[in-house]
Image 1 (cartoon, one colour):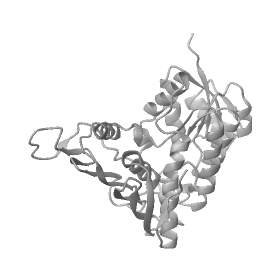
Image 2: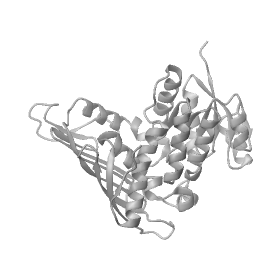
Image 3: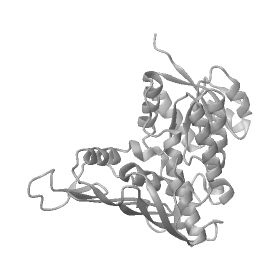
Image 4: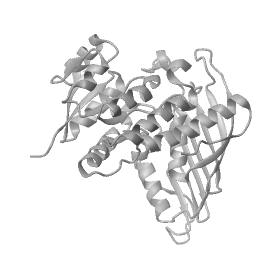
Length: 339
């Protein structure tokens, strides 16, 4: 008989709803416990999404439950690192929402906890499981674009007052900042496709009064392999749709989102080839590939393999984010932390 892993859900927001849906779709997991910021919200969540789960008022009690073998951490940003580390120290496997901490110190403590734990981890840098990114990664492995010398990734998401996390995401103490809360996706994809970032030089501007931090960032980046690029994040775009841009320039071709030009794919290619797949141009978590992420995570537990984005890997992406934030604050280039 195949083992079924018990999952404890920490948080009751929209992301937690999507995690539960992905977990229910996997035949090797069941949701056994839920714990939110308020017991009432957890009880409502259980009634609606996980009727067989227990409700805990305190996170420590969820961690002490022997039926909980996996923790799915879906709380606001400022709790991710501390609660993720606590789960690992309690001997649980960990599904962690991004970002992996809102300060360098938080990420460092989480990284250390992951290094000391033998449990499996995955962080929801969900674009790694997106069909477009998987196709681009495959094309790069086939040398279809040659050696990359320019990598660009942009996260442009005008956070409206109707956004489910609006009340806390506009405050630095809870969200961390524009590059930390959303731009981390762009930094992660730049690393994932282009390699480690060595140094950044960044600027920031604030164009809305309802946020208490700079809401648009842009950074010139230098990669360890000698290539260059740009990473940007903006939460200011109230009057245009969500946009996630990817540009790759290589010695044998180029990519602009889902458009490809390659000297090696087709003979005498006369124009851009459009890949027949979705682009990641929606901010709705209902469109995120959580099921692919969860399936990858459970496979790693069952077969003792590594997930597509471990806590340690996610912390390296956050190192880039923190360097960009520091560079914009000081007006000076900043070298990215080496681990």
